[in-house]
Length: 362
Image (cartoon, rainbow, N blue to C red; front, side, top):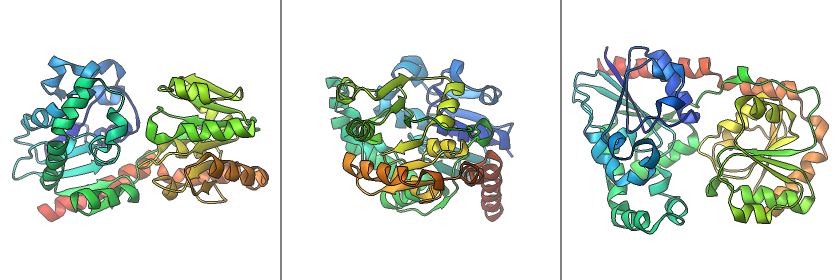
């Protein structure tokens, strides 16, 4: 069986690329197709595979790929996938838009329908240059129509959470199986005694609402460490003396902060959210906004707590309730909970699903 794996772009090793690694481990002979690639930022697992890029690699590549969204449909449809029996698309950008051979099976693992042409369109392009804003005004309606139309090129959808499955049904009117993405639990371990600070971690973008955590901890005079690039001047002006910005850190430092923090603050709405599970694998609880993927991974009053409004006041309230019952959160039990999302479990569930769909198509 000849297998093609289509991934939106390969310019780093984040959650989507961890899923891609598992696909490559399941299909070691598969070929990878992607819009653009930065080989210097890929893992050895991915580099073992033949990687084919689109014409976008030559006209802007890894530096300007985000500004070439209107060209991505044409770039994807130009891939020649003839001769492949199984096509696995890894979708958070427009990867599912390839044209599959008529006798192939196309399964899409969807991290989310493209946020930047649907619900978060204004946030992504408000601060872009005038030319990018003009291009999106002229093409956004067409891109949404193309995104919906190409959902018909997929035989079976897999969503990375029930939250995303609802988005797939909303935008594409398609059902999706739910298989949560993997977490490398073995990288993390609990600390004997955590330190007295809260944590936010991950790339800082508007929808993650780090501003809510900054305001809450500033008003409560609580220490907050923020790890991730993208902090704006406005955020730093808002932050009081108890707020520390660390930008990017290496994996070792990140793991150290995960196990040493008092708790992770998670005020955004994520489609799934790998960081909360990595923190739980480190034995620490998560204080999360009650929406999105966190609802599927955090067990209230056992591995964390929820707040119901995306405001500083609501987060301040849950911090107070959390600190009143600190001793009730057991690091070993929290870590045990995170064991349900290992790479091995993910690969078993994914392989079983793919096998069942291939069997139906035979």
